Length: 263
View: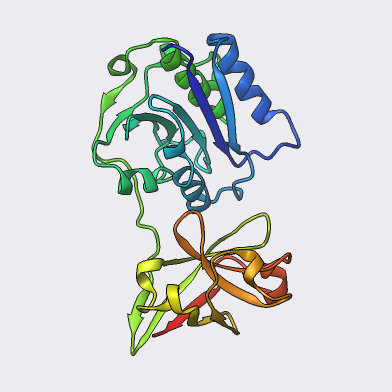
């Protein structure tokens, strides 16, 4: 693969050697690879957060990019390592649902059980499969290994449905799916879930935790100081923000908090 690109999305953080070691493994096998950090700040063990992170970013990369996604609370157990082809790109990840956004969005998904030990580092640790399995599999694929030789196709891979708002008695009940580094609250509402005219009229009737949010804006700067406002974020979900502030702290709300739309 000429000029290969390999991305990394993990919950490793950057305070120790883990993320850097993945890069070393990749570059030792394929020195001309371009390695891109999508994020190493996925919430630890949080499969939904990892799924949203890779789901928000992969389609901005060139075709044939290889994405390594390591959020792996089951490392060392019977869960399978996967090599997935979808949307003209590749994904190397544990079989725990962390690629669920990819599975839901793409129609040409082919999933393989990446179990050919020839492509692993040896001896293999029970606790660091990012280094010993996922990074080398991605690197050997980038170096030109035939995908069919790296594992058999499977259809019983694990996936989960992203939480969707539910209607009940004139209300639509959702939740906060994630909190970003600025404290913005990403809900599971999308633009099509809002009442007709909300996006153009600027008014919405949301209850976020115990706080009312009544104004839709197009961007952060349209919010008044300390005023929580709603907008459709870059990932397509309705978010709650405070202009030049931290909505999570201002509203004392975190992931999982209820969000209720009164239509």
